[in-house]
Length: 181
Length: 123
Length: 176
Image 1 (cartoon, each protein chain N blue to C red):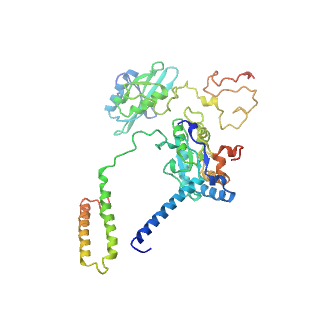
Image 2 (cartoon, rainbow over the protein chains, first blue to last red):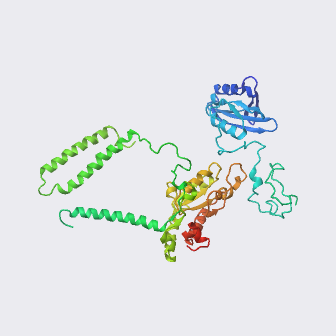
Image 3 (cartoon, rainbow over the protein chains, first blue to last red):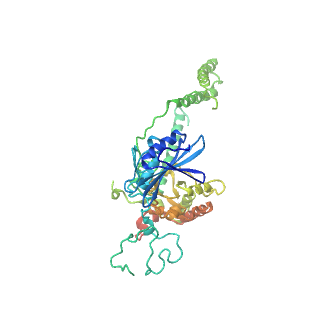
């Protein structure tokens, strides 16, 4: 279909159609697409776009016309709420659960918005850009062989923190140890 | 072993030897194995997660066909084999033969039922 | 029940007092009759399956694949990434295996976290939760590497003494 409704921006790149819509037009766009033949709900996920917010992306497929379309909307970072697509596509259920646990986007009207893949007791939303990968700090890269890459050089050299870790993050220095060696 | 109880004593001896073999194997195992009891080891196996629900499940009644075919063929065979060894001996006359054929007629009706229900053909 | 209420681990008297020739025979029986509870979690499971098939058959080593469950297995091969969500299940299934039991960690992910060592949700090596006897490195290791790992484990079993493994006092000083 060529017209995806009011408020949408359609763009084409490499033969793929992408439709951007503000958050309040999300359900309307999904419903229009479903009624126009895009009946297969492929996936729904999020993208962390600093500093603005999250982009929620859905991919639909029309099995009769064999065409696909990518739908996008933005939610602000401090209040990431979006109406749930479960009423339009039943298959969005678990995709929205995963987007909720990985990014923290809350889907209003979702019947069971609990974490899906993460273990019990996991704190935080891992796929956000400001989520610190603690393992890189706690443990040196196991595959390093060259001196200096895994701290095998002289202990007096200041260790550079791995990328993605803020400067003050790390295990506390043991008492009595000179931190500025 | 002879006498009235001869064959029964034989069966009892065979049973005792069987039990002794099994008990001996388990006893040898106890003498050889390490024992490390933990609380987790006694938990019910449920693929690593906590078991839910009861251990009882209900079978479906449509599997009666297997029981039925078993009765028709295997129980029939159990009766046929001893009969086949003695029916021609002196003292067992025409009555023995006719009795067995009456029994086989009942079995044949059962097989006819199975045939009509199409359970005897490959699907 | 508290862990302190359970009796200490012991080894049967014949096993403990066996002279060397008898121990040789018992170890021989144990190492050539391993039944594998293959814990296939990821891509290394495919290599494990390839090792169990006809080309690199490990049944000729006496290792029978695909035990019916942990209760009938004596070797656990952890192949693939152990995630934090799966880790309690791995631990519990290891505990449900009867002794004597052995563990082979197959592949980089179960050795030390592998290529996903910095993930938010990966256990950095299965030896953080269960004791491992043999580590097979690789990503994924070749089937021949698993055969080598199994042979290494069999050599370990050949030279072991069960009471050293299960009775603390035997291997830590005091003569039982």
